[in-house]
Image 1 (tube, one colour):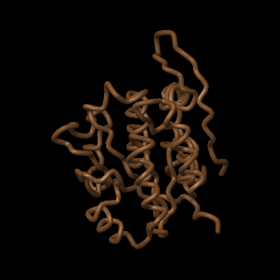
Image 2 (cartoon, helix red, strand yellow):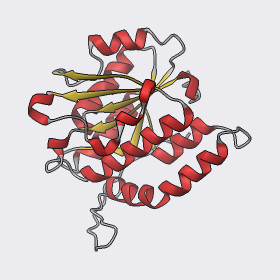
Image 3 (cartoon, helix red, strand yellow):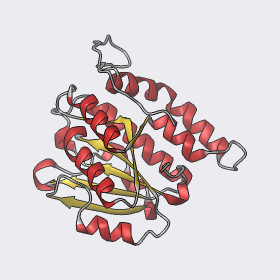
Length: 224
């Protein structure tokens, strides 16, 4: 059975555990933060609600302030601390049950092989919503975990895409009145999208001014 088309009116964003104290441990952490901030900007542009979790805030700190979730206003449906690795806690399930039109959940954050994976498996196990994972918006402590986790999620039935591909799917039509603002958004994010994608999907450690290392990751991204 084909998955439902991505539509802002039936989509929810999940931001998974991008917390300040993970910074020294997570591969390409700054790229995950950058893509997460991009997705928050997209949420505001297309009026898509967002749900945020943290893992043991007392030990690991709050959501990274550079993601700017505080700018979401009423689009932020909740910011829940958890001990479960999956984001699908009882509190989150209560939010989901209050959204009768919800069909798709777009997931990004850390770690790809732990909390992101278990979140996606929980969504699939419930059998109600289709999970979409932002490949250039997830990472782990060890870079080799990322393609393995993405492949597992894809195999289980999740849709794997990039931040730009998912953004265009959600936009859908260049005749819509929001397209001019969307086009400016895409242009504004263009260089950061390239850097983040190359870093996280090609296992490159990059900086804007400096040299970079290159190693193959072999990530498989679904065609939509």
